[in-house]
Length: 144
Image 1 (cartoon, helix red, strand yellow):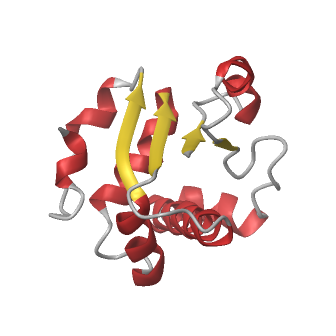
Image 2 (cartoon, rainbow, N blue to C red; image 1 turned 135 degrees about the vertical axis):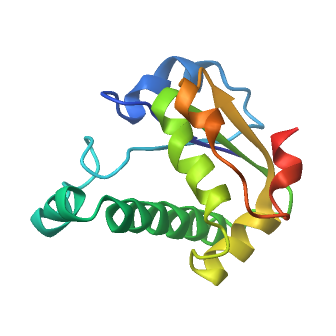
């Protein structure tokens, strides 16, 4: 199972061609981030927070995405080491953010993600993505 996150100015539809070529035994679940169609819009309070406290805003988005991944993994009864997280362009940022802040995100979500994820793939990541430092020892093997 691949969980794919789109890049800036795109939505989940950017993976349509890929989805058409995926073998039957592979499941591709595409995620539209909050504020991108067909996802729900960003609440006004979150838009304001983006301006007043960018760190809190970012942590809220990472919590939201980690919790969403947790739900997908749980609802689909995905097996340990059976998930590939894939980010394209700016969609790499939340994946790296989840790795960077794994110790402060919801423990139940992170335990589920750490158990289920086999690999993390960055497709055409922007320069800024690879400048971060990964703090979680559990997720460091995924960067190889």
